Image 1 (spheres, rainbow, N blue to C red):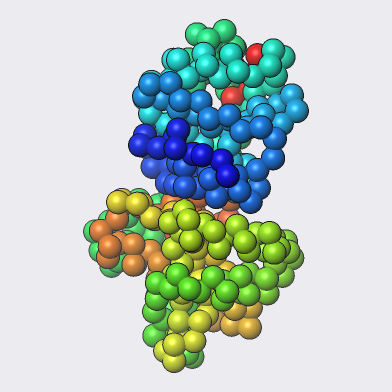
Image 2 (image 1 turned 90 degrees about the vertical axis):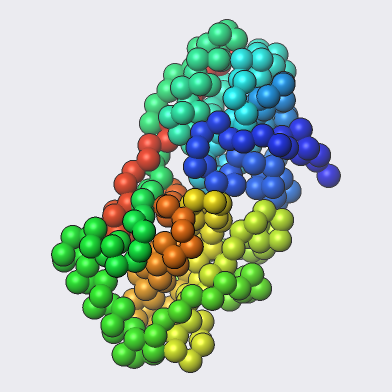
Length: 295
């Protein structure tokens, strides 16, 4: 088993990046999805986890499953020099999913280490900043959207009772079953390998599951995410396809927003993905950048 202790005890250089740059998440990802050679480079108060596969070096954690990348710690000068020293000459570097705070620092320090990287925007996360109470949140929405949310919540309540969220770490089976019941790519995504990965995120990387239940306590949907002191990160969600007429997706997400506000956290990060509901609920794009170059 790979020892990830080299990355322990450091904070991410880029703020509000959740669990993704940290050892627990990356250890879990590597155990289920890793391939190639893992290089954990730590020098003083800076660290970076690199995967070399053939002639390409990337940051540990594939982009489709790792919403943010960031170096750990604040001292990257010697880390960049060490990375350049351990990868082969002519190796292509592709560092994706970097918030601007991380991208600019890495660009600067790898240049000093002798590698010219180019920076381009390649993705966004969607971040919703929250007011202090749920009623105030509704007032931030456009009138049409506010009316639509209230209508869908009212219809849910009239048909199956008052919606409620229940934190249930044991609900991974329900979450997986609902996910697999979805049509198209979403249903096909949840393979046996992905089920094991998500289960390990709960067991080993701090993931939380919040289940949407109706008035009789029946599971209608589930949100799979992470949380820290001030942010909830919505990693994935699913709902019972037989309940689609109840608009369970929007009821689940708005119930989650209410819960996050009540907890005192300041934002919901919907992470990557351009689904329209995110902007309709007030989220704003946070650009992510990719750095590319050759050693």
